Image (tube, rainbow, N blue to C red; front, side, top):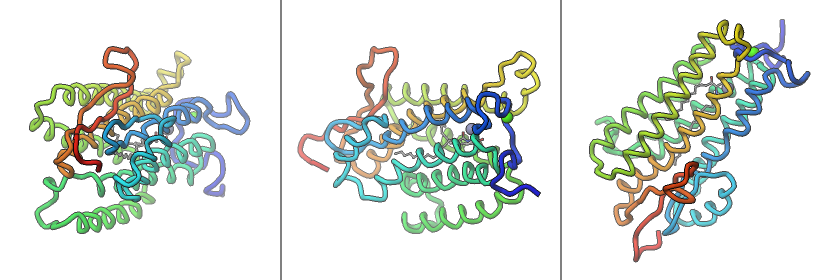
Length: 280
Ligand SMILES: CCCCCCCC/C=C\CCCCCCCC(=O)N[C@@H](CO)[C@H](O)/C=C/CCCCCCCCCCCCC
Ligand SMILES: [Ca+2]
Ligand SMILES: [Zn+2]
């Protein structure tokens, strides 16, 4: 019986052929695309420095400096670790296709989402029996522990369940957009949805139509998913911060902007805070 750490002991095997480009990396393009796709949304947390928050890994140290003292340590850390941790475990998964790799990949996504929900889920959407964010923390924690235990029953369906969470995020975004007049916010949400539709189409294509892609010698749709879901997260993060600042820090006026400028074809979204008097 193979060990849970052995190569190819996972329940899932993606469409890309195994060990075609390296004797130690099972799915070369899936591993590499995960490495390049991830990281940059990690810095998409921005918070008050009075100016900007950039969603690029390169700018993370800069952001961390300006965020310190404005956000508490847990929020800062979770906004950094949230996207990076699944990225690293996912690389390990595609490198080995091991059972442990698969569960680390899926459970790290589950826990990162739970942490993000705990910190940023707007209070107005709390269930009626939840009276404070502390209670909501407990609710998220218990739900996540139960989900973690259930995820061992049939790991192959975990990814489908995780993908369903995106629908809840879409629903929340739609609820927030109904209350928001800012056209820039609507535009950013539209771009996020566009990347997500392309991402989920790639993920489903790889899962369901693998025979077709192998027949035309192009089994790389899961690599596209990695890059596209990272891009949608890149747009989701500033949106989450925008809504959070409106709820939690009403003295500030958040403004969505693009770096280096709105008119460039390739841009990085970020949030600028407009508040002349207050520092944090
Ligand atoms: C201030 C903002 C803080 C934001 C914190 C963000 C926390 C991020 C939490 C999770 C990151 C999601 C990681 C994506 C998956 C990467 C790994 C991967 O590709 N795994 C696959 C196997 O390699 C696996 O099959 C995929 C499983 C499904 C994952 C579904 C994740 C849904 C995440 C929703 C992203 C929202 C995008 C916009 C939606 C409208
Ligand atoms: Ca494969
Ligand atoms: Zn993957």
